[in-house]
Picture (cartoon, rainbow, N blue to C red):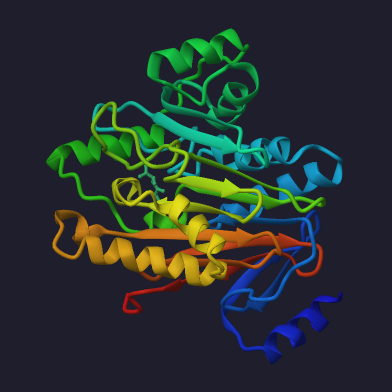
Length: 336
Ligand code: SD4
């Protein structure tokens, strides 16, 4: 479909915001976006959190089209922001903890519910690739800290310094008053979670992050925790989270979104209900001041949605019909 025809089609069903589109594997164009998709989409379909999801989707799409598995596509796709020093919330260049250490969390899950995860991993640029090795090469689901590093080295990964000069300067500046106060929607590019509905209609997902900036040394967020930062059931759907990990862990966020889809809710209804639950549970909580949580979800028929507590959350969607584009998530609080 030409971009003009796509534009007209979208204009006819209502538009919000301006979006940059990379047709998967193609070149960039500008067009309006729809708030969300409610119609079944053609397979395959890839959705990823935040704007850095566009480059990740593009790479994952190429891998799928080259007959790579969905897991390989996820590893390669989210590997793009992991290696990008300008993405300050994932992998290399990620903002460090309060001791100046970049510590990484990641997990991956496949259509058989097999999963692999690493948490509190240091000095390895691609934690998602290590998470996949945990899935394929160990009897376990989760490795953490020194043990995760030891495992990565035994698998041939190399240690690297992940703290860039820019992130070091930001950390030194933070040390001046050392206040822990997570920033909502950090520069609009945060944890990357990717959900894939492959050509055969199977679901898989991955998630990778450097976590909350200035966290305590040893802190683990929701992102490597199956059921919190990521969950899927190949019979039902898949969901993933971004935002304040503590709030997502307290509520088993992604697992709950999938359970609601199992009960017949659409991805949008499921994400909305869990976001509202998280919001209500935190009404009188100390974290409320900076509470932002967003979910993306997709079901077996390719319906997808994003929903967050506060505005500003968006996600990248890639399919054969409309290429690769950003869609805005609806939010509970609409005021910026
Ligand atoms: C964490 N959930 O470590 C991650 C950070 C994140 O959007 O996703 N921020 O809490």
